[in-house]
Image (cartoon, rainbow, N blue to C red):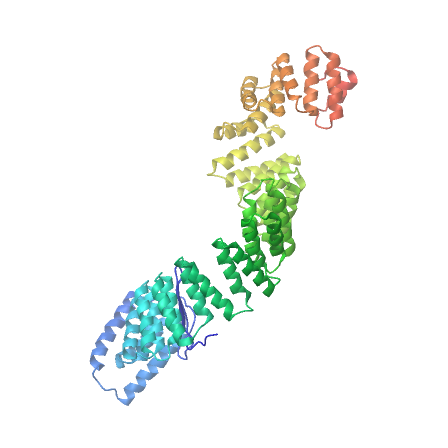
Length: 601
């Protein structure tokens, strides 16, 4: 392990800028919220400093003046520590008028300006501090930070290079200089700097690792592998270097070498999930499916595998669904991950996604419920749960779960939609209307969402026998989406039951049958409209077509009614009896029809 000679590290980041952690007696480490002086304050202070500095630049300070300057400096340092940069700058600038050539005063002015967000002045004062005392490493470091904060990366690099050259025993900063070169993609300069560090400190893991990363960026695989072997040789019991070597071999299709290194890592750490993942990838490339699956399971079974990495693996399988060849393995791996991370909402959520995509709706619903036990803040989980409750025709659960979700997300229109659907399925149309109308208002601006609300409101208002509102809702839904075949079917069916606007009903229903000529529900609706128009032969033809694929009791009952109207009375009674045996879903008059052996309307 390399000894750190100084406690200041400045790292370049492509997005975050620079951060400094300093361990010096007269400074404060960490980041601070910038506090800027007003323009007027800054101008007045600058004018006063320029005037006073001219008067005192060549003067020799009296003991009293020197004492005042030192007191002002100490006071300024105190206010820097307290993060009151306005007062700090006022004291330090007064000290500067007395001692403009004092390196420490210039340094503290640079620091106060930097922390208050005045980067240009910070750079100027830091440059002065370095000029006045070229042997103090902290002055260089502060200057480099000010330069990098202004994206002057070349200047910051030059400052680091000067630091290493001018300050005795500053070789440790070669590593930061190398990082700067790497961040700027100046890879040859970075390698030269690391060679200097190696000459000074000897063979260090950090040097080999940085060189390896540079060689990889240069696509120089032989040298990268050589550095990897150096790391392994100097750390024979450290599995991470062996794993890194295995990954490099695998990425470059040197599978036998990759397998050898991964198995070596596994001998060093039999519980290593990463080693199993590397081996799984090797066997995948070799098309050895059983071995690949074995090592993948072993990796995911290990609780030490980061849950986010497990999620990335499972996402890869989720994207392949519903491929029947992948489904069993995806379901198994999801279950394994849940067992190894039993309190992670992410694991249950991913399992639910895989199960839902694989058609395992009940299992998916249970997984989402488990996920919500550990994290109720994910809206998508609540929505997926609501969808499954609706698909599984679980109105009680649908209402309960959407009520819970709306406590967390009261402004999410889809939750109000499913809440309304739940109440509709529970035959509580008034509650359904309240939820749906509220959700529709929240969906203002989304034509698609409002169309869905209108479609549902058409059904609910029909149940309330508010036919004017029902028809208006259906018309609005169709205005937004003329090809909404569910609305076309329901609207036309309810019109037929009421015996109203039958020509319009026939036109709408005819469009659904033309699009889906074998859909028994749509055929039944169209037949019933024809029945209401006394076109019994046409109704019979459509119902017989529907009965080729269904034994729905309501369709059987309708078929019996049509046969009766056609004079086929025995066939009608037989159809009604078959409807009774088929189960619930018939009209309340069916028993009378069977008992009285005649059509009752």
